[in-house]
Amino acid sequence: MTLFEKIIAREIPADIVHEDDVCIAFHDIAPQAPIHILIVPKKVIPRVGEATEEDQSILGHLLLTAGQIASELGVNNTEKGFRIAINHGKNGGETVPHLHVHMLSGRPLEWPPG
Ligand code: AMP
Image 1: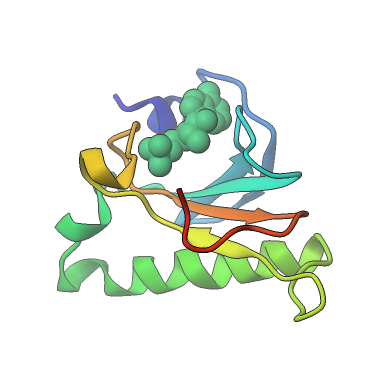
Image 2: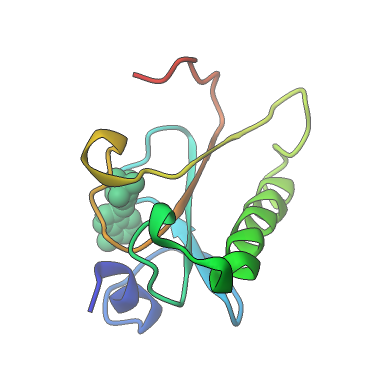
């Protein structure tokens, strides 16, 4: 079972902000910005580059949900704004092998990322 499956199963606590049939979203335990939410599909797709055509609606749903959560937190606008990141593999910075979308906001974020 992946770490995030354990959160979905309520075996590990998390500060959950959203759940539906397709995904769950919760605050990152080590936030890299004042707002740092993870949006995680209930289906275990290890990483984004391994998603298939069959996962298309799940991938879309994760981005739409990130936008909805950003709206709820008051940052889905051009004045504040937010960043979405998906880390794949070693160079991408992946540490949990269960696809997740990071939604970060609450401070200016540098580009390019480090
Ligand atoms: P990544 O490095 O893209 O695989 O992202 C994994 C993220 O999961 C990191 O930002 C971690 O801080 C976060 N994380 C690890 N364990 C937990 C946990 N128990 N609850 C919430 N977030 C977690």
